[in-house]
Image (cartoon, rainbow, N blue to C red):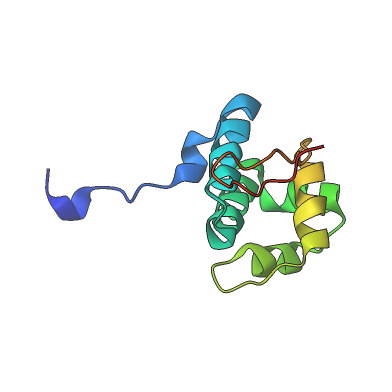
Length: 104
């Protein structure tokens, strides 16, 4: 097989079930890089179907594509709508690497 015959890897094709999606997003959020989180949400949106996610989140499909693209800059409200439409919620936990972590 020639290198040119290899298909480019698309993580969206590997995200077949809710547990895999949850784990994938958890890793992205744990990393703390906002661009990686945005990219991961975009990948999950493609895996789930952008039109369906747009309907469930109440965000226009084109706006969702734009917000989750590499050049997008989604508002926090958009991120929350996407996360909620995926049937997930965000949970905060102390950062074990930070000596100044807030504890309740």
